[in-house]
Amino acid sequence: MMRLPVGVKFASLSLLALLLIIATTALGLNEMRSLSGPAIELTVSAEASQYSRHLRLDLEELSEALASGIDQRNLAWFGQPTQERLEAIESNIQQLSRVLREGDDLQHANTFGELYAALSTETETVTDLANRGQWNTAYLRLANYVDPATQSLAVQIDELDQQLDQNAADVANRVHEGRQSYLRSVLIATCSAMVLLGLATWLLWRSIVVPIRRLTESATLLASGQLGARTHLANRRDELGVLSTAFDSMAVQLESSHHRLAEKVQQRTAELERERAALQQALADLQSTTAEREQLLATVAQLQNPVIPVIDGVLVAPIVGQLDNQRLDLIQQTILDAVMTMHARVVLLDITGVPAVDGASAELLMQIGAGVRLLGATAVLVGIRPEVAGQLIAHDTNLDAIKTAIDLQRGIDLALGLLRRHMVASDQRMSGTGNQAAFQLG
Image (cartoon, rainbow, N blue to C red; front, side, top):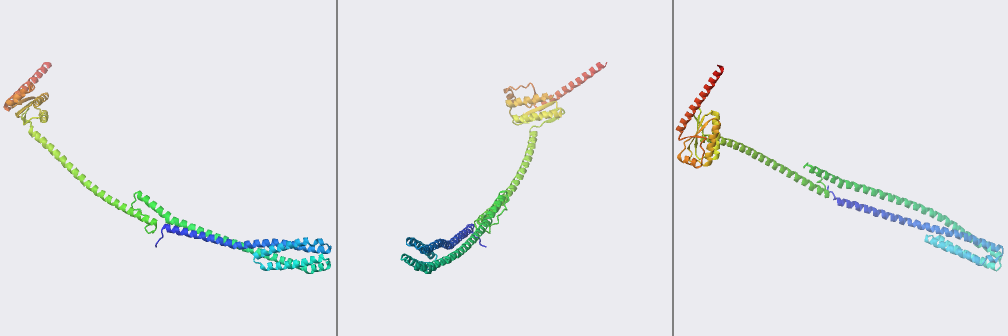
């Protein structure tokens, strides 16, 4: 179903409200116009009643004045006083006729005019007879013409008063009915306005408040991480429907982007895991390779710097190649460990394969000899070639802490001699100890 935009809906309600206001205004104006006629009629009736009361009083005064003047044979009652009363009656009749014509009562207006003409004529006749002294004739004329004319006017006044009263009652009824009609119209207009107000409120709630609340809830859910939140207002065809469609589209794109990002993160995590595993494997391989290399280096070092036991208590450490500080430190550690392990008494340092010795190397060789001596053994430097001997002399090497031999065979002989002297010394110490013990026992 095609829905109107919110602006069109409110414009329609505003137009309906405007039409209702115009209709109520027109109805009120119509009621005011309908009440204007009765108001005019009431005004006319009030003025007619006022003039009729004055006319009645003037007629009564005129009749009494004429009767009194004839009875007393007094001309003072005629003339100017009578003329003034006639003028007053004429003025009231004219005003009353004018008011009746304004009220469209031409019949009474004409009747009052004719009666006044007859009354004026008869009054003038009676006045003329009285002035001539014909009192009896004046009296008869008054009784036969003036009094009937006065009574006729009184009757017409009574009828007019009754008609005015009836008209006033009819006007009051019409005014009451007009007011009731106006109140009904106002009540209908008020009820219609309340209905329109309720409809506008319901439309505002349904078309704006509810969708905005749903949009707010969806936005809150989306902000909290619930990417599946939707407004479900895409079926609307107004501005909020367009906004809801755009919001749902944005939510779909955001959810799709989130899924794609999650997939990429998962893929990247898997790749990083594989790379980590590869790095761990490479590290393990490197550690294994390093261990093997260290073992190989140790093996090579042992092969390069072997310590060989030739006789019980005698070790030979052949040193071959160029000497440096690192290598000499390794040779020293190897020799000292072998002396401690094998309980050697003599260590033969064979430098036959050393091409050259500098000052630092010579110093380190002497330190090796000193270390061997500290462990209770004797170091013998063998295989000293002439050029090496010259280098040792050139560097002022102190050879007091170490014995020397020209070659390995001479070194072994020297070692055997050292071992025999060590054994003899040991026997003597043992024998001396035994004699001392026997002496003490004896």
